[in-house]
Length: 417
Ligand code: RNT
Ligand code: ZN
Image (cartoon, rainbow, N blue to C red; front, top):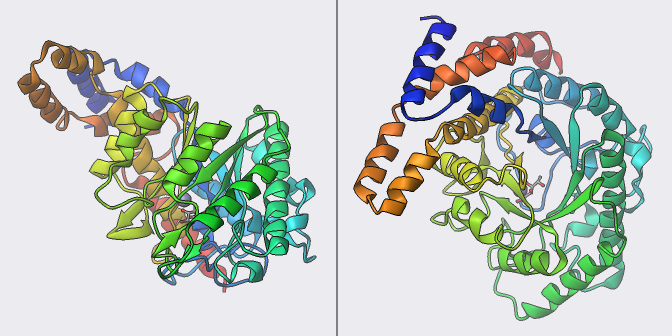
């Protein structure tokens, strides 16, 4: 069956449930995901380091890793050409272009990102940003913004301030606010004697970092907590509760990384809870397998539940959807394409939900019919709508994108040796 005919039949089936597929596709086209640049080079960056440390590790040695900014941008462009819609790119400070000169992280400036900004501008992409508080000699102790030594804290505070300035520069240049996120690896491998002091130090470091106000049209700040990390199993200074409280008190964005909680916790359930108080949330959508393993996002029940909550709560303008995974065992461009397409498919499924009918059943107390309808929806032909959307957006439908990635790896990625 052709894509158009399959779509016509799907449209009919959804219409019978009271769902307008054209409207859903219009909403989907307005969603901008933030594609994390670090999937393209295993979080290596351009500082000349090979390992990322901080407990972060991309495993695998699939050939073709991007080694330069131009290679990384080419790979991102390839991935973006296979993902329907217009999106954003998420950078880390270690992706600065310093023209071969060694620039310390506390001395990074907007000029080190003009290459990225020009590229993003030409492609109408937004940019987001992250301070890099790992893979550095001053992070080796496992403490940065909460370090007991004030000189080391100062270095990292200055790094974070430099990053906010760069974020504001990007947001202003591209006319879309840059979300500048902070994640630090600070913690302790074994039971600490003092959980309080590092958290108080982190609080005052953050206070200092945020002293300089920026126009929210240019820069928005986000804080990302974590349950545990490799080397910080017993204690993480910037835990979820720490940042939740800080974000509420200081009107910051809370960043929820789906790999950063107990495996039985549902991050989807947290959205309507925190968004009761917080204006905006940043998501790092990832797929933890048994632990915070950062596997490529796929269309799992968790991914679907997250998308459902975003759509059902009418949070599309308040939840910024970033991706965060790194897999070096498969083609890295394919990893981006797979993860982004899975996230968009989850959003499409959520947008195709007959929300009014479901809510009516719930209000009427007909929980039997609610469950039956939710089950019925699972077999509706969202794939036909997806394929139609891909065609509409001029990207390959179905698995046709893989052929393009294979051709790209032969002609470009595999030649990088
Ligand atoms: C680490 C956090 C953080 C990083 C990136 C590279 O556990 O998830 O977001 O993955 O900043
Ligand atoms: Zn993350």
